[in-house]
Length: 359
Image 1 (spheres, rainbow, N blue to C red):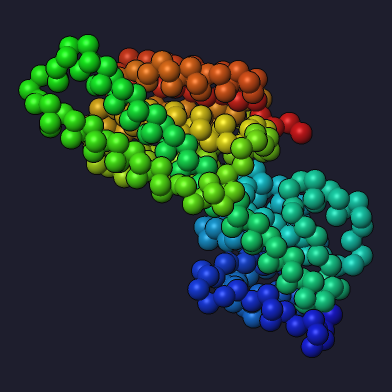
Image 2 (image 1 turned 90 degrees about the horizontal axis):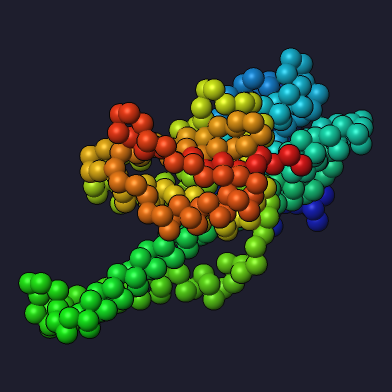
């Protein structure tokens, strides 16, 4: 990298002490380049991991889950292209941004190929340290925002489902009391109304929790179609549902994939992001609610005949028709399907299938 002048010193890009330090993985067979880039990233308060070859880099990416990978194209053994393809084909590393960091002699064709295969940016080793720092910081921040937005979509989807269920329940109780001109059996009118008031308070509390994000404009109202990793979305949903499942002794597990599936390079779907999140949240939430206590809900994903399948297996009651209908409508809109199966062992399996992203 070109020596940095005082006016281009990257101090201004350093992360604040309050922000959790991001991790950068540098994959390059040239020790000098690795050391120079590592020193730059450490100066920006990032944690840095180094790998001197493609195989070691892939292993480190899978186990350490860095926030950004800086990858050299020209390496012995596994080339940068080989490493990039393998990173993008695996669920655990698919969403990690990769910046190509290579020599000035790299052809425009190779740069274009790397970007088309999933790299987010290209940086020449001849650029100043400030230029490199800007690219790395941009990739890290983009990943942080994407993950925060995904988590927020999951929270909103579960909030919508919980809120609707509460409103339906309150309305049903009020209608029943009105028709009978009495309260449910075993309850006096004051305690019945007090329970309804408590349900309304809980509903208002859940709505208040999400209002700041809505007012800040974090949630976009218009549909946005882009590549979506179904399994990563399922993991985010499961993370929020796990306390509910654990309270009933239910083990909620999301596995990386099925052995019989096609190569996972097409494991993303091109879909409305918010709609996809809502469909996955609806399916997993319903499975947890319908499961028998002290059982398990197992989620996995695979690719079959050009379609990405998200499979949810559990033991318990059938998922309500309204939830299945909503997921089915979403699947139909994305050239997919929704199927429900009963096994001889008493387990139920619901499979959401969506056309894989073939762009």
